[in-house]
Length: 64
Image (tube, helix red, strand yellow):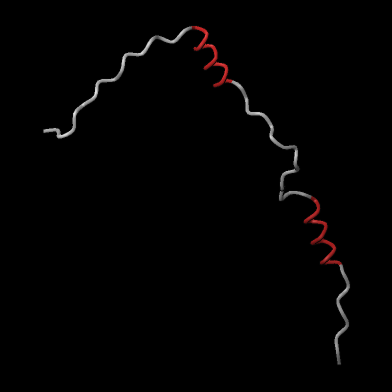
C-alpha cells in the first residue's frame, strides 16, 4: 500500500511546428569554438628535440 499520494501529470499542449524546428536545429547545430588557444599535443617536436639535445650534450668532466 502506498503512503504517498500519486499525482497525475498535467495536460500539455502539443508542440507547434515552429517549436519542433527550433529543437531540431539546436540538436543538430555543432558546438562553437570558445578559444583558439593551442592544445597540448604529446607528439609535438619540442619534447623530442629537448630529449635529443640532452642525449647529445657533452658529459661533465670527472673529478679525480
